[in-house]
Amino acid sequence: MRARPLTLIQDELVDYDKAMERMSDLVGQRQQEERPDTLWLLSHPPVYTIGRRTPLAHLPDPSRGIPVMETGRGGQLTYHGPGQLVGYLIVKLDEAERIVDYVREVELRLVEALGKLGLPAERRDTPPGSELLTGVWTAETGRKIISIGMRQSRGVTSHGFALNVDGDMTPWNWAVACGMPDVDMTSLKRELGTASMDEVRQVVAAAFEAS
Image 1: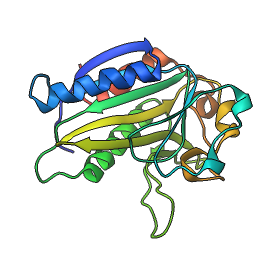
Image 2: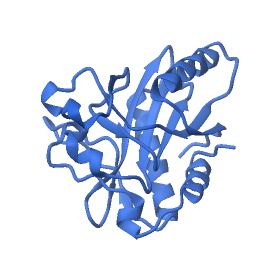
Image 3: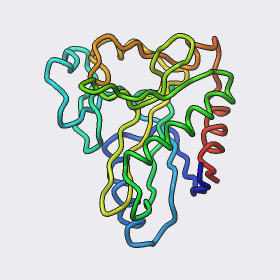
């Protein structure tokens, strides 16, 4: 894997709409060569985000009280909440590099990070005609632990990944995650019995060469 050092920004809980405003600013700065490639680590208060292709039937019952927001990334419905580490990647790609190539690199870097945290994991290729299997899955239990949804604009990536660390997983059961009704979403705490957000942040940042 090629070296691709990133500048690290870290925050705690940031409202999703505020994060989208800042991410847009970061992307504009990168497009204008006003800042380096960047990894922004943070978490969000409870929110469901959906892609343009997300069917209405996949959305949660409004009575659950968790807002649903449409987003410009690829992919379908994802849940964000406390105890989940979100990573937004603002990276300028080479001219010959496609967004799908970079997503694969992101998957592999996250597989490496999970391995260092003691959880064997894998990326999956999508069979023809299947819902996209983008993300990272546990190798032994076959559960999905990281969701990935990204886009590219004028050569610069945005959005990124969501790694379930030690948060409440119940809201995942109130909607159809990732367009897959049978997907079993999991977390580091569920798989390992314990998880430290501080340690996860450090290991993920190192996997992306971010400082």
